[in-house]
Length: 132
Figure 1 (spheres, rainbow, N blue to C red):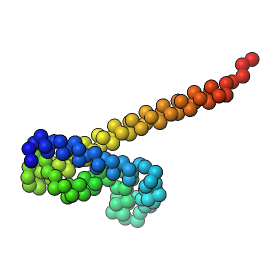
Figure 2 (spheres, one colour; figure 1 turned 90 degrees about the vertical axis):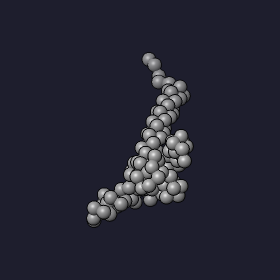
Figure 3 (tube, rainbow, N blue to C red; figure 1 turned 135 degrees about the vertical axis):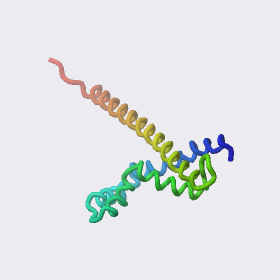
């Protein structure tokens, strides 16, 4: 695989990694399992138990495991064809995926802020304060 193709794979393969990691760690569809994992990450009896359950609540941590799955699934490596290429690919994919998730988080935050402002403006319009 040429270096250009490897770089394209890097940026495109990071998209589903970011999508899965974000969905599991933030979206409503996984809220109950995530809350269970959060409780277990706080109240677990052993360090290993607490860390295991924590990885399902942190998008950065979880993205490492999703990346390992995708590297195994696609046999993707970066720059080198041996184990070092898998290692470089893994950390590169995690980094790019987390940039995507950070950008997505900022966009969602802006959208939420705009919705809140619009709702406040609508309430002021619908219920003007009485003036003396």
